[in-house]
Image (cartoon, rainbow, N blue to C red; front, side):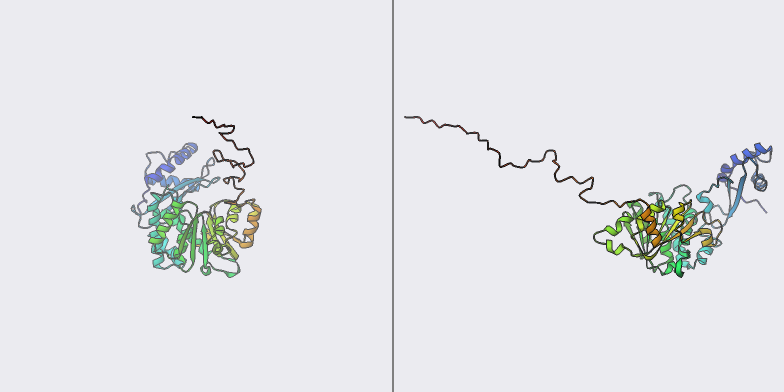
Length: 372
């Protein structure tokens, strides 16, 4: 069989690593003039017998689907001490029947929902050219589908306490939605659930609402502002307080701060689902209900390097109380932007003092009469 073609980008990324390994080990099997076949053979050797100084791990992952260049070989090199990943490591061609459609079918989505997810991938790439919804590095439909859409859908299959299901939730809120994740993919998957997507960046919400409208998502609304201020709204505040079955976010802020923002939104039996990649504080970890890797949720190894944390409403309230965060009182008399009533303003009219002696310009004036 013919060796699968290796893109020039992949060759450029790993050439320095292979050259270093070659010089250290005294192996002349690889140089800049080596053919793709020699590169693969040398990479296999490094993978099976990694040099001690580098402990290089070479991953060769074949991606299938209807990509313009056909089948490709994706190569990445990383150290055992520091696992380096890029968005391309999680790319999935949304048009691929072997990967994308198989994954969405396993999640119980029909063909129409799958096509909307594919369309969403295209819309995000299109909008990302003018508004920075996600990282513009390696922003392709495959990256959007694999790195953003599929991990978002994993939130919907997280096991919840007391045999609760995401599908039974009536109202959910996505705080810090950014480019619409995980809110938009979940709104496609669960059309009977009402979604509120919140973000403080107005231009991102403009794009998110436009994408929701183009996808025909009648169950999506957006809110421009801060999540912690939702319940303080004079008109609609009561409709948000303790009103949501599920709240979720994706690496928006440190968990104590995030819990402070959303603590007034969750109803008594509500759940917080938080997508995160790094470690969390021990005090926060002690209040966890469950922790689920996205690979396990999707039953697909290598789908994501992140996990979904689950916290009950009481735990969220407790973490918020211990966070040290204080809600800013807007519009109060003690506000820094509010002038004190007793403070004199430069250039203001002085109050009239009626007790002072009136100054007359004609005091002591004597009338002189002229006799004719």
